[in-house]
Amino acid sequence: MSTPAASPPTPTPTTELAAFKTAAQTLRSFPSGALPPPLRELPLRLINIHTGAIVAGSTLSVSTPYVIASYVWRPDRCPPIPTFGWARRTAPWSLDPSQNTKPTSKALENWKAQSGTFNGWAKLLAERYPTILSLEGEKHEFKMPPNPLSKEEIDPDYLTEVFQLVAAEAHRQGTDWMWMDSLCVDQHDPADKAVQIPRMRDYYANALCCVVVSESIRRRVAPIAPVPAKVSDNADIVGDGMDFPPHLLECWTVGFHDERVWTLQETLLAKEVVCRGANVRIDATRLLDPSVRENYRMNTTGAILNAFPTMGALLGEGVEVTPQYCLRLCRNRGSKFLHDHVYGMLGLFPEKIRKSLPVDYETLTPSAVLAIFSYLRVKEGDLSALLTLWDRKTFPNQKCTTPLGPSWILVGFGYAQTEIRAFVPHEDVNAQVDDTEGAGYALHATMAYTQVTSIESRATVDPDDWTMNADLMDDANYAVEIEDSAMTYGATVEVDGDHVKNIDVKKIVAAAVGKDPRTLDNGESENVWVWLLLAETEDNGWTRLGIMFTDELNPPEKKRFRIT
View 1 (cartoon, rainbow, N blue to C red):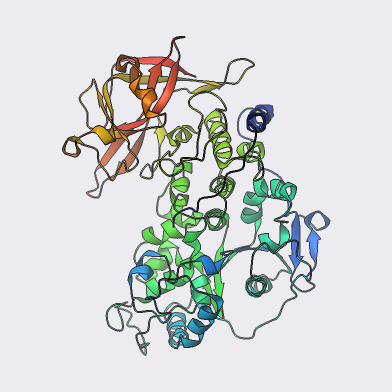
View 2 (cartoon, rainbow, N blue to C red; view 1 turned 60 degrees about the vertical axis):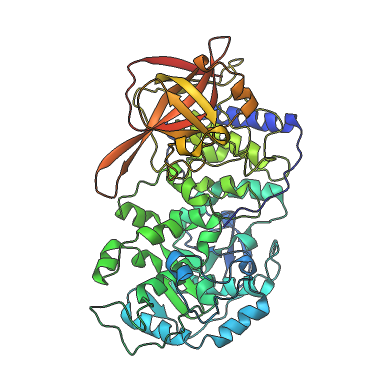
């Protein structure tokens, strides 16, 4: 799903510079090293499911249990059919996948009415996977808050439906309390959002469970194929050979959650995840448990975890939940504001960063927010932030009104390379940011380096001579040759092309900042090396031009670089 273009705010340079300096000062005020675990705090507000009262969390015992909601804000903006891989490719569905337009409320109601096979498939899945999916019986009605803080574009009927589903899970879990962002955060109050967004990590991590409202179940998505009487224990393929009960179960679980930025951290941070819709309840934590899947003879969780990641399942599959991995998953998710590609992921980063980053949709551009975020990450030792560059092609107008610091700090909005999975800095890099008065936030790092002998824009290179591995470097815009003999996979250069042409190539080096260890399909391991392209300045410093990737290479020379 492409990110919608947003009209950037028009702040003055002073606003952005002031926000950057304040964030740097806030980070500097923390003691060095990791902070002690924070004391448990309740969300700022909670909802009583029986009275509908929105109550200040500070008036309740800190041990008060609650459940928390995760849902798509605008289901009418979702595609007409599920977006999760298998469901997207497999037809026919009872909601008519031939329809290419996004559903209106009336169309959605028609689909629900016409979905004659949904109940049968739900019953089949409940019989096939009794410890994962259950069908609820008696329906309770809970008290909706009479005067929510802000409904913010959400259809009131949909809001009520979400509330009832989450409240039902709270009741099942034996608590009277729940949290929903559209009811507990004033979406029209910048100060309220600035206070609550940095605390989202604690909100989700401390909840009894995260209740995912499945849009696929709401739409009663089901194959048109007749529902078989039963499914053999030895075969998951039923019907006409196209319908797989485990995949339908996963389709109902994921819903359209892989469409929205915020839902990534919501399922990833929670201790337990439950999916609800209509009278169907799915224990997603059990569904993604490798031992449970093995017992039910399901395939591995690899595909579903990219769309619906949970911490326990990722760790069970041996996936290292790095910032780079999470940002990669987030890249193709949508949001109303580009800012949310930072704020919607903030809960996955350390407390110092969460408390130092300004939350400001009104006066800061998305580029400024991302630049400050990247600075904070590098300052705290997360050098994978150096792999994020301004994407001039996709976001030509999304840039800071003025550079916020030296060349290693972002100047415009963009994403890190999509194929980098687990960036690891080289052991002796010893990167440090000099944030003392007058030092200009220079980045000092010890790196092996090699001379660049040629750097040409991709537009001027004969395609037959372009040796880039396209799967690795989709975003590469320059072909680079280096002094050492190694396969290079192209480079992504952030600065203006005219500026690059005016630099003497003898003053450009590639400095190795880290590597991306990975396992190939044949089981063998390899290390892709990650380089900073640096140009020497007149004061013996260096400016960052971009980044480059090569096969593993070990240049003999190292030096301490000062990147300004």
